[in-house]
Structure formats: structure tokens, C-alpha cells
Length: 72
Image 1 (cartoon, rainbow, N blue to C red):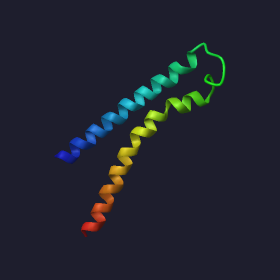
Image 2: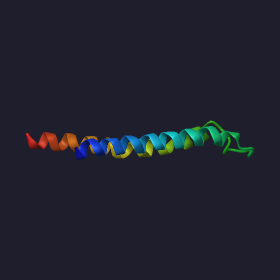
Image 3: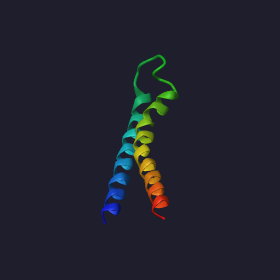
Image 4: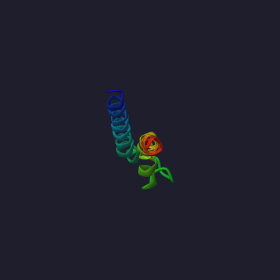
């Protein structure tokens, strides 16, 4: 029960980060600033929260895999 609840929480956090990153990606290029901050790499920087939110999910999956291999 606790594992499925943790999985739901992780999915919810990832979805929130995905939505936040998408909003930043769509809103950042509409700024009227000129210079290096208004380029295609702005979208990559805006997507950074998504990648950061995925790190604990992959780390947890790897830890579970290691624990399962050590048990048997």
C-alpha cells in the first residue's frame, strides 16, 4: 500500500514539474528582452525542472532493483 502511494506521489510531483516547465517554456520566449536569454536554449533551461524531478524516480527504481537482487 505504501509503495503504491509513493508511486502516486512521485507521478504527481513529476506532472507538476512537467506543467511548470511547460509554462515556463511557453512564457519565457514571449519576453521582450533581447540578447542571449531569448533563444532556443531558453526552452532547454525551462525544461530543467522536469529532468530534476525525474532523478529521484530513477534513483528509487535503481535502489529497488538493487535491493531485490540482494534479497535473492
